Image (cartoon, rainbow, N blue to C red; front, side, top):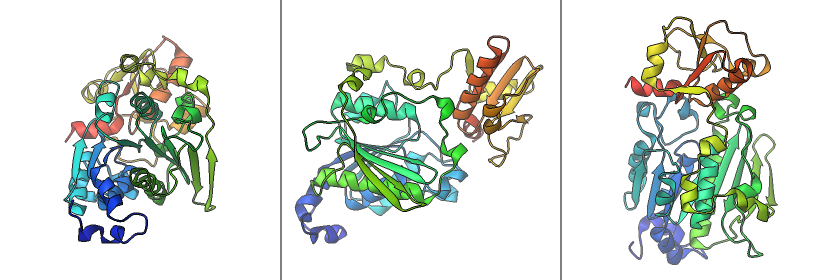
Length: 369
């Protein structure tokens, strides 16, 4: 980086920041996991601020329903890989930094090697499997983790694996030791989210990352900040340490790689077959088979094939009787259909063959590209 670069002029003139702060940003390496509602503002502000190396890990494609809150993308980007589109947009914002697209899901086989290449991680994901996996990997690697989450009108931000004033550190498991039941958790497809909320929370995440890198201010280490945009009220409280929680984290890298986080977080159900897009298409017209759409009735796109609409909101309260021998479920991304499959398994045990579409109708769209 040049001693003086007009791009960062306002940083240079900022008391307590100046050229030293900008040099620290230029030398930093940040991994952003998730390029959705939270990831977009995090990425935009880190790139604009001049963070020298940014990695973007996200396997998803841009869909029309993303555009209400994921402001890096346009209508023309629908169907394209988020990570790759994000790189192009961010390079247009700041061509002087290194930005790498990692268009794959973070998982036990790749997480440790991937995270080890960066100084700090930003968790911008929207599911508990990824959150626990990322947290445990960061604990094993002693990497700071800036966490963000949103739900309808409220968001949360916290900084983990950074020493608090008393010299101790906490991680995500000190806040939530074990995952909740997936049957009790709604994602934004079900519960909705106001589009501006991830912009607010993601910007706060970017702020904490910049503070950590440059050493300015007081990083929100071991604290959880919550913001409700309906009331404009916010709260910040200390997260208590609990030594017993650390026993829930794999003790070694080998143990981490042997952990099935889908099973730990209840997103893998025994006796439920996961169908690929091709397999799903091949069974649509099978005899004695019912294809069930568990999305809410307003959700797009329209299926375009034979199916019965049974929204998840109704299934949870009153599971319908099914006469067909085979039940095939699908939703937008595969999360709700797996929850529904668990409910049907509990009711019918082994009396029926129950399967669901892995990746949901989004996987079908990808298959048809």
